[in-house]
Amino acid sequence: MIGLTKQQVTKARSKTERLLAFFLMFSVIYGLYFAQGWFFLAFALSLYTLKSYPSRRIKSLLKLKVTASSTDVLFLSMILCSALGLIYPIRVKDGLIEVIRWGILWYIFRLGGRISEDELAKERLAQWIVFIGLAVAFWGWLPWAGKIGGRLSSVFGYSNATAVFLGAALLLCLNRKAVKLFLGISLLCTGSRAGVGLLLIVYLGQQVLSWIEQGYLYSFFGQQRPRRTGTLPRLSVKIGAMFLGIVGLILMAFRYRSAWENLITWGFSSTSWLERLAYYQDGLRMAWYFRGFPRAGGWMAFPTVQHVPYWTSDPHSGFINVLLNQGIWGIISIGIWGGFTLYDFLKNRGKRIQRHNSPRELQKASIEDRLWMVLIFLMAHSLIDADFSFGALGCLFWMLFGCLQKNGSHTFVVSFERSTFGFNMLTKGILMLSLCMSLISGYALVNPSFLEREQAWNKLALQWLERDPAKSKVFWEQSLNWDQTQITILRKQAELSFRHEDTDNGLKHVEKALSWQPFDLEAYEWAQSLVWEAAEKKRSTQPEVAKRLYQWVENVPRRIEERMGRLNNYDRSLWKGYEEFRPSQHINLLAEYARQRQFTQPLPKT
Image (tube, rainbow, N blue to C red; front, side, top):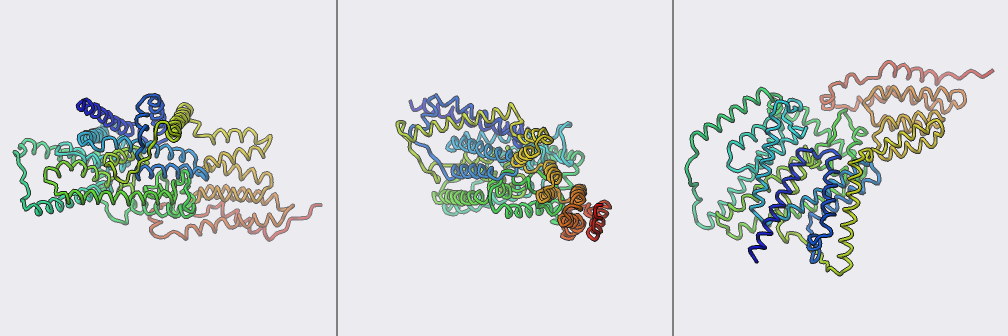
């Protein structure tokens, strides 16, 4: 009976390990960065839960108790903060993706916890990760594989994200020199300075801690360090590894020369470092403008605060990403969780030394040490570059963290008897949540325009523009509430307001449109021409209003020059075309006309 139970448990853990490997492989191949991938996973998981609901499996999980930890509280907090960001969103679509993303990562974390007590399953999962890392590296070397900036990017489409994944696979690889060489050379071909540098720091730090710990134990027992036994590697193996390394470096010099040039550029005055500082500075300024409140798609509002023109779809920092999307409460939640996690890590590390483990027992714990190395590497890199918004990196981090969760580490238990009201509500809640998630995600997959609802409102606004301008304006307001980044709609609202002689709202929409294009001279020309036309119409009927509009037109060149005056030497090194950002002849001409019109009075009508 005991053997049968043990066999069933082993099979269950094997299925869990394979399921985790499948999740990771799917996230790498499909690329969990855009909405479709997250919605597909949400749809699949919700259907799996609905299928399991009538069976005994879900009931057996809930009939006695439900365990939760500080990490579960963190995920719940992040989901709630993401949902709270939908109240005042920048883009509703990004907020919905954040909610789904944290929910899926929570599910993967719980799956990882199922094999936390099975060292063999964790070892096999590590082998799967190394295998997937090899596949990623191999794909990047294929002739038809695309290169981003002359650097290896493989299936990720971003070299630095590829470097993080390859670095994690390299840390998990054991005593396979050919595999390590291939992964290491591929990592160098990504040209990621942060990936290579942090990998070396984490690896050396772990080695130092291991030497200190082993030195303490051997000195305590009064024993000498064990010598390595076994035959030396064959000469052919050494020659083969050396040959592979030389060939790889030669290929790197020809195929990924830009990666090597980027690797050897470590000066802090380089453009890459300065760009990072610009991203962080603008991200903190935007969080201050939001007053620490979560805003769905908050990073998409970066044009309104940037002090130099740049275009990026990611803040290059997990800290900034959470601060904008989940707000200050998300940062506090991560800080508290990080404190508990660090406490558990130090406590378990101390217990290992206090138990006076033998060298053999320390060797058994090597897989746990390697997993912690990967987690530290992923966490450190997420603070300064590609973070867990890349689905493969998020899935990898949380499945490995779940594997390290021991029973009883900051865990609390909520008990539910089958006949109690709490049990019934919990089971029905799981059913309703899974049903809603399957319907929403399935509909989003079948009808992608569901997430682009602003397009439908824009069409309705255009249809009612001539018949009922007020109704058209309502539709445009709804569209902007769904997605504030629509500059074209802001321009149309400004034009519509001036057309109906609503000067105050017209100027408000013009200023808002300019805030999204602060370095676009064409935007200033459009705004200046629009306000000039409105001033000309008001000149005879409302001279005071016309004068205010003329003053706005006259002030445009000064606004451009003031923005240029705020640039320092570092900003100018980032913005190579800053000298071309000067008021055009059209802008100067209208400004001069507006200045002259303020000193002349319209002729009386005869």
